Length: 202
Figure 1 (cartoon, one colour):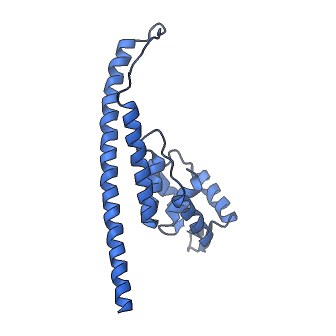
Figure 2: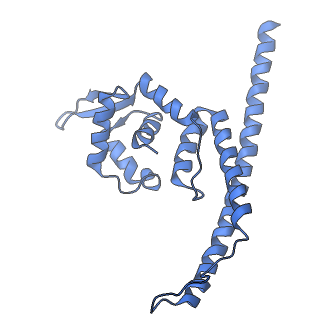
Figure 3: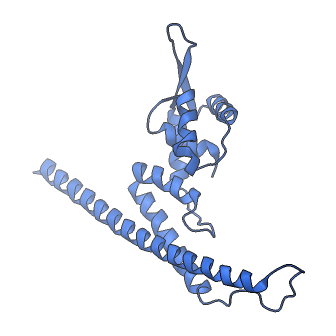
C-alpha cells in the first residue's frame, strides 16, 4: 500500500492543514501505518503537490505563522479511484492493515468495489482455512539447538494456533455479515434509481 494512497484517502474526507494531517497519523493513522515521522508526511505532501495530486492554499493567521491547507485535486481523485477499483490481492495475514485501510476508503467512494474486495478476501480466507486448518503442526523431524525447549514451543504454539483459528473464523463471519449488508444496500440503491426513473418517464 503506497503512502500516497493513504494520504489521498484522508484528504478525500476534507482539506487538512499539514499539522492536522500530522496529528491524524499520530492518532487514527497509527492503526494504518506505524511510525510515520512528521518529516515524512511533509515530504510526501511536497511530492504530491509537485505531481498534481494535491494542492494547497495559504491560511493566513494573525500573530502566528501562516499554514498550508491541503486538498485533493481532480487528478488526485482520479488516482485514488484507480487504486480503490484496482484488483485487490489478499495477504497471507488476515485482517491486515492493507485491507482495513483500503476498505474504509473504498466503501465510502464505490460500494460495488467494496463488495468485490470483501468477496475476494472472504474467498481467500475460506480457501486458506480449508488448506491449512488440519495441517500437522509443531516440530517434526528436527534437532533443536541446546536450550531450545521443544515441548514448551509446542505447548504455547498450540495456544497461539487456537487463538488464531478462532480469530480468523470470527473475521470470516464479520466479512460475510458485511457482504450481506453491502448487497442489501446496493439492492436498495438500485430500487431507488428504478423508482426515480419510472417517475421521470411517467
